[in-house]
Image 1 (cartoon, rainbow over the protein chains, first blue to last red):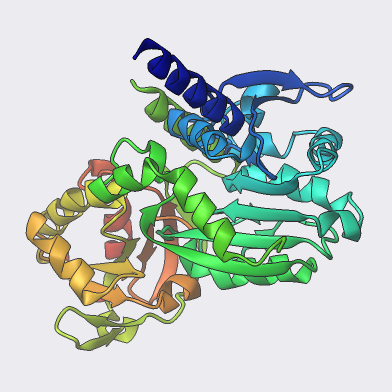
Image 2: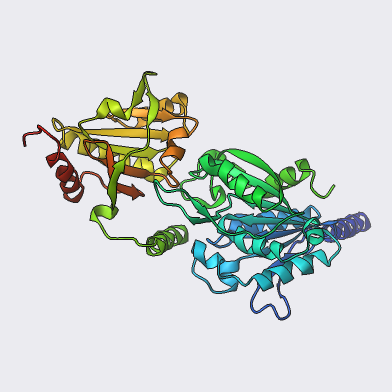
Length: 247
Length: 178
């Protein structure tokens, strides 16, 4: 009986280690990156997800989602840019992230040989898109980039036409735009898509019904949002699987 | 105060600081050069089509909101109190439910007693026409249908400061004896 239990334990541990079930964060810095540090949740599967938290910082729900993804075999590198660069929790802080650091991070991920997927949230999409614009079209085409309620406004004042950030050239890039329905940005989705398409990316969008921006961390979350916030990992996996990118 | 609230406060303060050319006005209102308001065409909860011309000759508070927006819900009772305080004066408060259907609004209204008209903007056509990028966003129009003030964000509407601003516009209403 003892030997049987021992055998089961060894089998369980080898399986969990292999699949990353004991996911832990390893804090890493890129050489010569000037400050970009990230948490790595190692996994043995073929996919690597770069998770770029919004300007509001990284929440516990996001950390848990990264762990579960690693347990399922997807390696995750998770970065909180505001914390990494000691920046205030403001959208404008994301504009101050050095493009060179973000580009090096993307390249390091691509050098792993894994299929690189990116999730960037709110204004944190800006450093990601700027870094992408400094890659070659061939390199960009290797990335599958999901933008969750991206904030690309340069200015947005009532009664005035919105102005959008300059994105540079993004030909070859493939972007999936995830937009919560319950957002003041939803009526402006067609305009935002046009801005992204003008930069040359291949673009798809998905509406996330009954959800608001940052639903996984809101004090006033609805019961539905709380449940959805617990399955951020599953939502992302589902969206990436439904998307033809990288296949 | 929780971390989330602290972050919100930081964002709000930061956003206020980042508004180019922002000038301080009562209760956060931005005074505007008087220009004719964009068209507003929407159906009310009885499915009757309304437009701005239905309210010409009166000062108008146009408030873009949504049932899922907590600051919008928070400010609505004070808007209703403002309506009661200003009863008998040529002031109309119009709530424009951005991106919402009749069912959305009907499900919400029992939780709040509002006597001012609500218009539906299910396809957000008016929201886009008025270039509304945040909720709530409000506009104060004079009796000639010109936008005089705009405001992004929630406030307490039944304060003396707001009433003073509205009374200034009411004083310009022709034939309105006060």
